[in-house]
Length: 282
Image: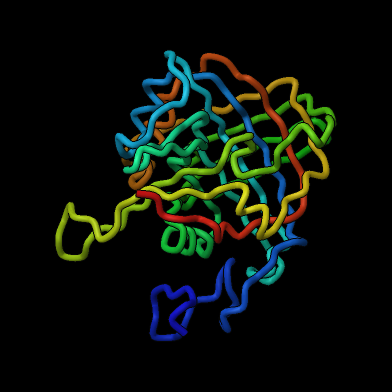
């Protein structure tokens, strides 16, 4: 079965996951649910630009400021996980362009980092999609008018996101896409090291997930949206002893200045695309 997704360990056959059953049949998560809490903010263009992995990435608009979001999603009723779910939280840099070798330009949102609370989507996402996924715990406290998120590793809490004064708003005001923006898609960057040759890559290239193609696989429908009166987030990098494998990541996140919080919201909906439209770009 050469046209199926194969992942290590290959001794046991093709690997079941979000995009295929063990027999190779496609999965359709039309009944899966999502809840996304996000905080969009204005920040330094220079600081964000330093997170671009190659010179092919650039900001669409000139100027010294840029926009980004910290966004946390809870997925549930996932058939490929036996009806259960997981949580993820990432940094989304908006207004980004990628210039291809032929000069054509793609517009989208760049995802430099995505934390997830479960190993299975991390492994499949890194290997099959080239997504920059890492593990962390994601704890949520949701009340009538507030939503709080805490992230951690081995008991060390390093991140928080808070939305207060939530009020229901018009659901048509949200795009319901990955990243929540009205752009063409999501950029990521795949890097796999070469065995036995330190510093060399087996694979290194940018990837793109076009929203238009994703919506054809499984359309996401926003059912409810709640706008926040007050929204905030913060990161605490601690030190190398507390976060021996993540300190270099969290310290970079903590350096991102928050010039202004543009808004915060919680979006609820149904239909979770499997990201099978992700493709390599040169």
